[in-house]
Length: 518
Image (tube, rainbow, N blue to C red):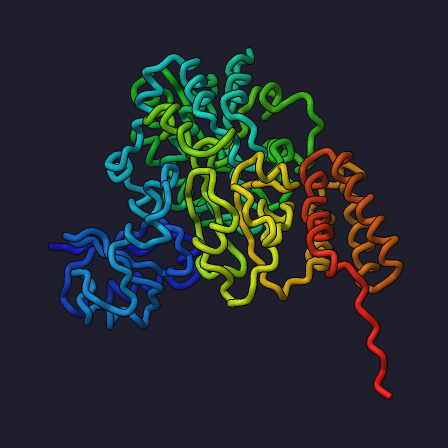
């Protein structure tokens, strides 16, 4: 009888040798005359344990990691195919504390199934949401999404149901669903993990969105830096077409929907929806003035839903389990679960899906295990390169859109980057301005010129040139960019700069003069 061994094909696992580990397991099994079936699954998101090898046993799936090719012979000697004891063994995968504490709705299949097996997908509740959606009037689907309280997981936090209703109510001969998979924020990888580990859930979510709004064509716009995600999505789309999930008759219904993947060149500004639409149309990726809103005049001037991967991947569970089921998770106006990505100087980095409501301190100290360096945490940046820096004094902040906004922060795409006490926050502030200057599309003056002046001003502070005057100038530049920029690139760059200045003033003070010894 063949034993099933799972070796991730996720980019994070591939980066640390997953293909070589899979090949070593295959060679060793052949040499020992053992019947082993290797399934290339997605990642569970426990990145410090990659390559995480799992074995299906009668007692459940047993995890071993991090496994290197050189560890494979010893694993066979320890009878790991039967779940044997070994220093790399973590017991049942589902009992690992980092995984056990999660509430996995969007990521329920990621790392569990073969990403390209529709049989696996159906076995784990896949297509249930779509089947229920087909039986409902489109307006009822929109109502379910609205009542679930789902807000845009790409960072804006805009109610998804309102956006869908706007497109559904618009009159046009053609409408589109555009998935924003241009994941460019530092410390974020949730979109990639879904595309590589559970692509059918994104396809299902987009089809449901199409049925709800009257759109018949969808595009997944992602970045060239994601070759494995692009390949996986393209293969999954072909499988879905052959299975009748996509095409002129979705699952035999009267609804039509088809989709394709488009690859961008990796411009950060194309994560902004109107720049993304320009790029999709073959134009330069620059920001459009709003109004008109993309929901009314979007791709090729037609009504368009633009949603993030996580937003669309949340739709199937909402349609399957119901709006109230999803709404009951979370706190305040932040409903459902959020896949939090913990990165930087952290012991247990990875993806942690949970209901809104944990504190920043719980995420860093308890779940993340503190810094990898063992030094004290100095700052945590939440929300990508445009997110605010929070000191330990703000670690009681609840992970919730409004709670972060109340403290001049933003959740963004839920990426967390941790810094220890060796970080220089003046350099981090300068980096924010430099990042904006490099990535600016150049359309508006506050972003294009303000960021360049910001870099120069930060340099003058670092050189001790009129520090007080230049700190005031930097603050003034931030206010101009915040209220005068066309999009969030220039508008949010002040968050890291002002928070660094506010919470870490000593890093912006001139270095004390050291007198020469007599």
